[in-house]
Amino acid sequence: MGSETPTEEEEREFALIEASRLIELGNLEFEQNNFGEALENYEAALEISLSNDSPSGEADTRYRIGAVHQERGEFSM
Image (cartoon, rainbow, N blue to C red):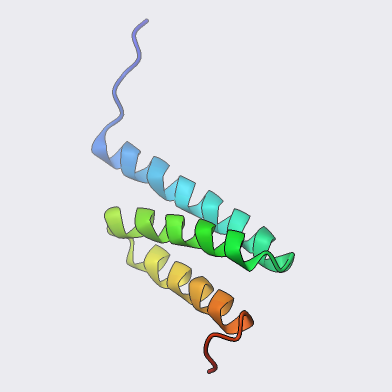
């Protein structure tokens, strides 16, 4: 019973699941005002979204990154 190599589509799906997990971790950190940790998770998720051609993942993650910067007072809307 050998293990099968995942297809490109499966690898992409696994990567996007990881991006979702990182966003959820970022959300938890954000809610606890741990903005540095939240930003690290969001930036990692953004990298995955960009490398896997996920426009919706990219948009969502950029929004969350912006929210961190706003909470830090680094810019205003």
